[in-house]
Structures are given as C-alpha cells and as structure tokens.
Amino acid sequence: MAEDQPAAPTEAQIVEAFQTKRMVDGLWANEKTRDSMLNLVAEAYPNARIPEIEAKKVVAKAAEPFREELKSLREELASEREVSQKAREKDLATAAGLTEADLPEVEKLMTERKIGDYETAVTFYSKVAKPVATPRAMPALTFETGDVGKFFKDPARAAREAADKWLLENGKGPRR
Image (tube, rainbow, N blue to C red):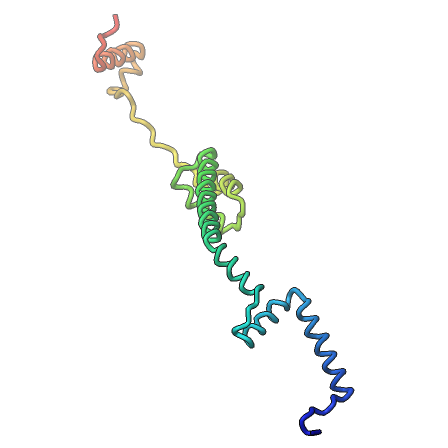
C-alpha cells in the first residue's frame, strides 16, 4: 500500500513549487507576457477554448476591411499632398521668373547644395546659379545710308531725301 501513494514532497520541493507558482502568476499578470502565456496554453492544449485569443481573431477579421480602406485613404492623401506640393513649387518658381525647363535644374541644385527648402533653392537659382541671358543681336538699320558723302556736304537735304524715300517705301507719300 505504501507503494501506491506518492512520496511526500520535501520542503525544498514545496518551496520550489511555491516560487514557480509565483513566477507563473507574475507572467499571467504582466501585460507584456500575458499574450505569450495564452499562446503557450493554446499550443499545449489545442482543444481548449481561450476567449481572449478567439476574441482577438474575431476583432482582427472584422477590422480588416477598415484597415484596407484606411490604407487606401492614406495613399490617396499622400498622392494629393504630392500633387499640391508640386503645384506650390511650380507657383514659387513661376513667381521668381523661372520656366518649366528650369525646375529640374532647381531640383538638381537642391541635391547638390543640400538645400532642404524649395523656396530657398528657387531664390538661390534665380539670383546666383541661373545663367545670365546673352545680349540680343542688334536689329538691322531701318534705312540704308547710301552715299555717306551726301550727308557731309548737305546734311539737311540728305536727311529729307532719306525720309522721303522711307515714306514712299512704307505707303505714305513724300512730305511737302
């Protein structure tokens, strides 16, 4: 009969069991480790009903369509912000007198010079980095001088003749 009954636990075993119970109770009470403990129970006893795990699965499944919608709305908002930012940048560049062709140069300048603000980059480009326009060619003279010697002999008569010639060429009669 003595063989059927287990041996009485020793004092060390009782202390160890008590410490183990306190440790497990602490793990159950801690918010960070409670989920791990629930998962361990579910793994050890697959047929056990654990309402906390089941409720999380149901809620996650019900929330999935809302997460997808939220994700698409965030992407749409980011796209709209990007379009708005590009329009604002283009307006800033236009206000500074830059053309559409100058915008890639401004963006290149931002990366090369490590300029974080677009407005600053536009100002810098328009004031410092933009190539200076080359002077235009001088327009052709409106009348030919012809014989320059006439102007030295009688300047008034030569000017009158040149004016009459121009008036005849442009559909107006000579002056009288």
